[in-house]
Length: 322
Image 1 (tube, helix red, strand yellow):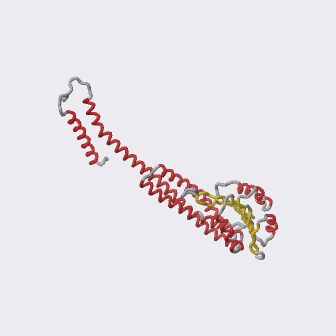
Image 2: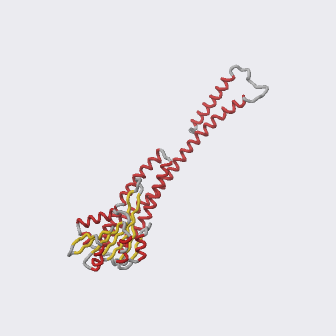
Image 3: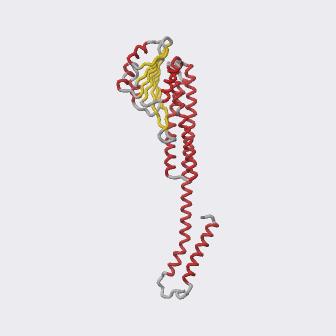
């Protein structure tokens, strides 16, 4: 699907669905153009080369899935690959949404295969108030990136909730499912750092480097988005330490529980060893066996065995072994 927004002081903001008017809009120096390609067809992909004449390598990276953010400067336009975030199917996990941008002096092309909340919100904002597009395509890019970065904060809240739940599980009754959730959260934390760390550097470049298509006044706004990404990246680093601590606590709790079980089993083994020795003595086939004719031999033997068990249990309890 292709959607086009054009703005000029003379004509105001217009929403255009026909791509045939794009060449004339791009030639008009009074027009600012935003082209959004969402899950485009092969035919719609052709406008990247036939109308905008973007570099083939940039088009290739745009259409293919890229797992890492990047920023390429082609002089009269910038090519950016960034990633948004949305909640996954399980609380505490998230999925990334790849967003591609071609930023020129008077045009912005956004390319994405999946629905983007930040882009849709920016569209709604533009339709309600054309001020956003009147400030230039670089400011329009800022609006989209600001919304994209803000979408990370609910994900961070999910991380906090899951960490609290796992901490309670580890201290109360750790199980195999607890370990699986810890590893899952650890993987998500690594993915979050892998995405936010390079994006932080990209926003830093947009706010500081002298790009021809970025106005100095807009660079200040990119600095604000950069500050948000620094905070997100710092939180992602802290999640790494917290999940590592949870994993160590889980191993410690399981080891302690295993030691308790081994201690009890060892104590029971030691307690029952005398009970096996005494019957084995009387089970030997000796010709001259003492106490064979004693009337109270059987109850006396049972009493001795019970007494030994009681004494040993009392001794283990006193030593706090059980």
